[in-house]
Image (cartoon, helix red, strand yellow):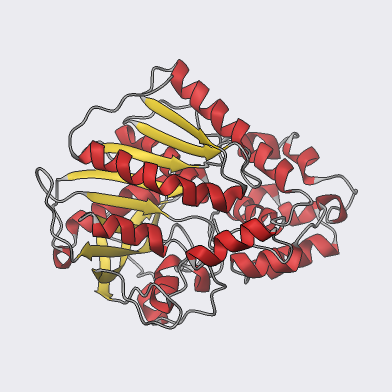
Length: 402
């Protein structure tokens, strides 16, 4: 996730500058590409359309990613199992595959981008403003095919269901199917695959590895890297209240209201709360942080209670509980990397997710570190994630530490 604010500490600012995380400008792509046809293909993962695209690593568009790039629109399903169209990007690396067997595919689940269509990773890549470009480049340089989903409603019409467990898992798993079925990508249609993601993407990766045995059992999934996953949305929401990243609460409110309209989230908000929801709908990550830093949720509700109080009551509590990750046993090995000093996604709730997995006999490794801030934790996780994925594709057995 691209967690930035006007009041960064010196260390956090330096880390961002070092990795080139800059505020994206509006991205422009052919709007017609993202339009959803009246009839969708028969199977989840079937490609609706594709076209050549760009992926620049810098906003000046001087550095191209080392891959052939195609934008895709493919069939998936939302949290209720209804067929939907999801956009994304397939990257075929220029680097040869020198490992054993067929070239692997890594499905990368993006971190927080925003909920507006202009924030979609497929658009940000073309603009050179996708902040996870360095990690994606690392995957490509290792010879992996890569597919990056835009998730439900991020690029395509409709609201993005931010941190919605099932919708994100489906979008990630179906993106692999789409990459395998896209002839122009020239990637194996039945080779080894893995999943990666950090923050929102870490939660999507963790959710996908929980569901893959029932949703996409034909995939040869070797493992999943889940960095700083938001496994307990109640704990994350409590941490974000009054935080510099408080704007992300607006993303979550929009998501809940879109996935479960019967909740009627606006009914509990005052005018300031409704205004925040209207604003963040068109603000990508940096804009949302800058506009709503340190906002207290008690100032957004009609009765003056914080949002945390509502999340513990029905009908909201059961819907939030549906998003919990850790209830289902992962179907493949998982690496969870999380900084104990994470200032956005609390370490404790991820550790609890791992404990629940371990109790079910899962093959999971929890790797804590002491990198300062959420962004620092992402950077610190890079080497370990790359090494772990490399071993999975080399056929080395994964050893958990439950």
